[in-house]
Every structure is written in C-alpha cells, then in structure tokens.
Length: 638
Image 1 (cartoon, rainbow, N blue to C red):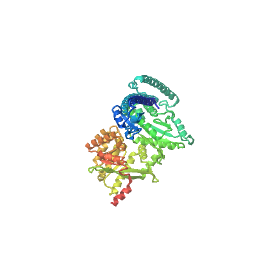
Image 2 (image 1 turned 90 degrees about the horizontal axis):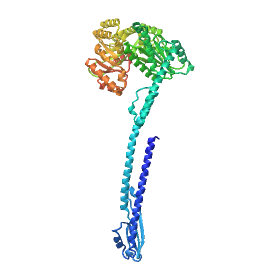
Image 3 (image 1 turned 30 degrees about the horizontal axis):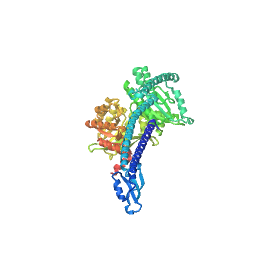
Image 4 (image 1 turned 60 degrees about the horizontal axis):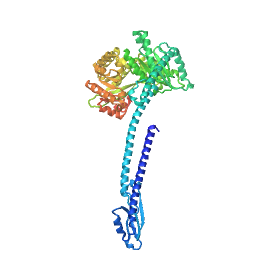
C-alpha cells in the first residue's frame, strides 16, 4: 500500500473518531438535559404528596409543565380514580433516534395512591439529533475538502513521478532526449537537475565506450574498410551454426551492395570505400543487441550478419530499419538504389550449401521488388535447391521446352461503365512436371540476363492460347518484367508481333511493376506509346510504393493502375491509408485511368474499397487463381 493510500486511510479513521467524539458529546448533553428535566418534575410532584382524587385530574394539572411519554396513577382504595396515558416503550422514527434513546422514569407514592411516569425526551432528542447532524456535516465536509486537495496533490506528484520514471527508462535505453525541466517543480526540482546531470554524464561515457569499441573493432576484425570479419571467418561461423551439436537457432541476413561498381567507376575507389563503410555502419546501427551478433564481408559487395536467438518476425523490424536507412542514403548520393537484403532462418543440423542458396535466392527476389527492398525466405520448397549455375540450366531448359502453364484470376468491376479484365498468371515447371517458384524463376532469369527470353515465351504462348481458344473472350492481362519493357529491342519485337495480330493485341493488357518503370521514364513513355499504337493497354502494378507515383502516372498515362496490396489490406483500420487511396482514385479518374485494388482478402476490405468508388477488385476474396483448363471447360459448358 502506497503512502497516499495510508494517508487516506488515516484521514478516514481520524474523521470517524471525530464523528464518534461528536456523538459522545451529544449523548452526554442529552443525558444532562434529561436529568435536569427529571429533577424539575421530582420537585413539582413532591409538593403533591397529599393528593387525593382522580388520576386524570392530576395529569391535566401536570401536563402544561411536563411532557409525558407514560403516565399511570393507581388509587389505593378507589379504582375509579385510576388513570393511564401513553406507552412505556417509545417508538423511534429514524436511525439516528435509535442512537439517542434515553428514558426518564419516576415513581412517586402519594397519600391516596401511587404515580408512575416516564417523561418524554422527544423534543430534546430532536434538538440533539439536529445538532449532531450539523456537526457531522461540518466534520465530513472538511474530510471531503481535505481528501479532494490531497487527491489533486497526489495526481500532480504522480505525474512528476511518471515523468521521472520515463526519463530513467530512456536513460536505460541509452536515449538522450532533452529533459523537460518544467515537469519537475517544487520538491522534484533537484531530481530533474540530477537526471539532467546523469544524462550528460552517461552520454559522455557511452560516447567514450563507442569510440573505444570502434577502435577495438578495427583491431579485432580483419576487413580494413568496414571492420567486419572476412569470408574465411564467415565460412567457419557457417559450419559452426549448422552443426547438429550447436543447438543454435537464429537468422542469417545477406546484404548486397548493388551500386559499388557504378560508384567506383564514376567517383573512384575512395568513394566506393566510403559507400561500403556507410552500409556497414547502417547494418551495425540496425542491430539493437550486438553482443552475440557477428558481421562479415563475404565478397566485394556482399555482407552477412548472423543474429542468434532471434525469430524471423523479430528480424522484420531490423530489415525495415535498414531499408529506411538505405533509402535516406540513396537520396543523399542520388543513386538508383543502395543495397538489397535477403533474410533466412537457420537451425542446428542445417546444410550450409542449402542455407547459402536459400539466402542468395532471397537477395535475388529482393532485387526484383524495387530499390533497397528485403525479402524473407523462410524454408526450402524445392526450387531454391538450384544454385546459380543450375538455375541458368533450368531456365534454358524450360525455355527450350516452353514449359509454361497459365492460371487465370478475374478482376471484378465495381461499376457498369468499367471494362475490366482477367489476369493471366504464368507458372513454370521442371522436366518432372513440378511447378517451380515463379518469383525465384523471374529473379534468376533477370540475374542471368534471360528475362527477355522468358517474357517472349509468355507473350508467344499467350497469343497462341488466345488463337486456339476462341471461348476465352474479353480483355486478358499478362505480366512482363520492367527490364524488358524498358528495352527498345524487346519493345520493337513486341510491336511487330502484335501488329500481325491486331485483333488479339486489342485484347491484351500488359502489366509491369511501377518500381522497375520509374528508373527510366523516357523508356517507359516509349513502351506505352508503342503498345497503344497497336491497340494494347498498359497496367502498372504494385502502384503506390515509389516516391514519384503521382508524377509517374500523370506523365506516362497507363490505362490501369493496380494498387499495391499494402493499401488494401486492413484499410478499415488506417484512416491515412484510406485518404491516400481516395486521393489516387480521384486523380486517376480525372486522367481517365482505371484504379484496381489488389490483395482483397476480407469482406470489410471489399466494402471499404467499394465505398471509395474503386473501379475494380482483385484478390482471394473475389476469386482465387485457377488453372486455365478449368476456365476452358467452363467456357465450353456455357
């Protein structure tokens, strides 16, 4: 129990005591007054000892002077003179009256009989109760006033104590924000000054320790540029964490510095070294608990971080912090990107080669998501077992075999005047007929410069499909990579193919990721103009993730924009998100561009988007992707 509560209890008991003393005083005063009244009666009745006659006459004679609760006269010889009036036991009409019950009995022997009475103290009792009530009102009124002011003072004190606790917690987290001295007044003023002094002292000590730590790091770690350990030590660490007896789990983070070659070429190796040092420092700062974390530079532009005793979910915050730091650095030096991040979990008895392949694939996928992105690859699915060289062989093989299957997912229009389309999703399979992870195939194709060949395979098979399947009507959307869309030779090839099939070309909607198109606006403008010239349409997917989204679609004027799923999911919980989506819809409508919401997986998200007057909806709640064969059967049935 706190001091404040002890004081409240003490105060309560004190006023209960005062109330009891007031009651005792009132009771004694009532007793005294009643005794005086009884003495007066005794004197008066003593003068009537010789009384002979009726009891009623005696009652009428004494009544003007005294108030009787009970009056009884019993004549010794003549019962006709007997007289009884009132009750022996008085009735109490209130709770307080029961506290002040007092009796004034008196018995007097007269010459002719015996007189027994009880004087009524009702009037004195009422006066005493009224005075007692007034005393209680004063006593407990004082209690309320004192308790109220004590409460106000306690709340003020608690506010100061919470402020002290918050500042102490910040100091424990090595946060050195300025201390607001206005929160520390009166008796807490010295506490505030002490905290400020402690903050300055601790900040200086932390600065000295950081400087000492940096000096030790430069001495211990082998890489002279970043202070990280080298690839040889990483190989040892990898073998260590993958041993069955290690009983260790954690996360392996691979960071690929994508702009090193360009910086070395344009600004010299000294600038390249500064670039690597900045990335290394940002990696260090993103790790909150570096005690057991180990950092490595495993190649010219690749870094590895082994973080033990952490889950993938916990590591997401680190990845987001790194992404934000890289984005800020990117704006400072004006490069297309800074680095990409791959994140994979590790457990005891893992295969080092498989773990590194998985991590390498995570980085490759991250590179396809846009500047400074990260990707989490939690487990092997079979496709990740392909290494660099085997992926190249696998992609060549699927290109040779034209090993592609199509799934289809409709986009539901929300208004009658909106012409929507169905998206054709490409799936690739190996020689055994097992589907390969699509994202990995695309990322590896881009890595090996084979994305154009892959996109040509998608386009040609789509044209063949539409020619051979007349029941497959309406607009059809297909995905191609931004690398192909911004390549003039590919655009020229695509235009020539579509020119020969203008009827089918008019049914095609080419979907390209916004992040990839923003890097080369002139090439993007050329791509859209060329495809518009043959009647095809353009849809920009994952819209809203770039820094220049509004300027982008205002200048290049695509036919559709597909909002990134992050704007759709949980839109009902984020008013800022809803405002942003509404703004996109309003601007796009003025430009004649249709807006489609993707990732619609809940009814409330669907209803929210419809209320914003979106043009179309796509997602698992609307319809799941289905193999094209099922679509053909449905069409034939109709």
